[in-house]
Amino acid sequence: MDSPCPDPSPRSAPARDYWPTESWQTAAPADHGVDPDALARLSAHLDEAYPHFDSLLVVRNGYLLHEEYKNGAAPDDEHNVKSVTKSVLSALVGIALDTGDLAGIDEPIGSFFAGHFASIADRAKRAITLENLLTMRSGLEWNEWSGTTIQMTASPDWVRFVLERPLAQPPGERFSYSTGDTHLIAAALQQATGMTLLEYADLYLFQPLGITARRWPDDPQGVVIGGSELALRARDMAKLGLLYLSLGQWDDREIIPADWVRASTEPHITVVPQDASKRPPVCYGYLWWLRPQQRLGSFMAVGHGGQFIYALPDLDLCVVMTADLKTAPETFNDNRMIREFNVVEDFLVPAVQG
Image 1 (spheres, one colour):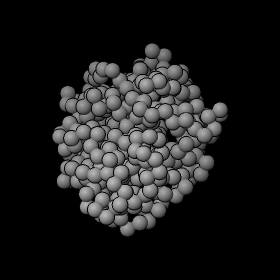
Image 2 (cartoon, rainbow, N blue to C red):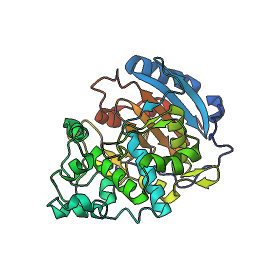
Image 3 (tube, rainbow, N blue to C red):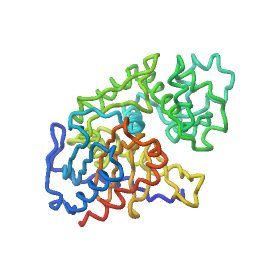
Image 4 (cartoon, helix red, strand yellow):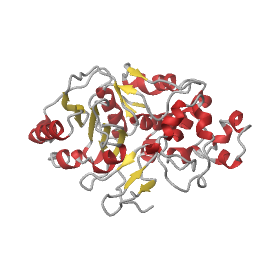
């Protein structure tokens, strides 16, 4: 497909001389081709323009080159990463395909929610596939920015609330960002695996990476929240970025199939803003955002208020940022973060000298 976003998915895994399962090894930025003065300028810019940011980590070639915490934050703090959770969910889908717990992403949701659909009249909803959900094209009516997610979380049965949304357009036709779509993926995964999403993540993803500090709440029926609320340490967010830069490989073990890493970080959808004359389009993979950084491909996990994992495969560069949700300005919403927050492009990409 024609896309305004370069395909950033890594074609091959870089060689690693260690893995940060137990702890990160640090190195001087200049030793890995990064200008330390540019990092200082970035830190000062965040202090001035975005004072609610409370951590910044920069990893290149697998080494932690820069780590700082602000506003009382500390390395062991577990941050609510908000919609970064969605990209972690994408990783678990890839793992479930590899284990055989999921047959394929073309599987219709009717096979997972037969009990719900017994009393839902619109049979067309049964044909929504996991791929439709992964690309936010379920067709179910949803307005993420006008309170639909809040309505879902106030309902007694979140899965039923999502399934009962009207079908606004045929599945697969139009992108509409929806935490409801990802909650259906979480429910389908739990049914397919017979485990909670957190149990599954611990077994196949978190424990192999040495991630032991995590929180991930669930809904009233015990379905772990697929689209938000996962809490992780910033260093562990960086491990997830490094895992994807390494094509799903970790310490000579395949954690996520390489083909899934490529597929989920390729541009599947072009998202054109309403004010297209002022804002460039961005792209969407399987629960990962894509946007050029100085003409280089990148993929991003993005969470409300300033939670980020950036990955730039051409530079073997991972950048993690977290922010205090209590002090995040209302104007710093998801749309602005994805389209207009350019600090990696403006400060870090030019800082990589080789």
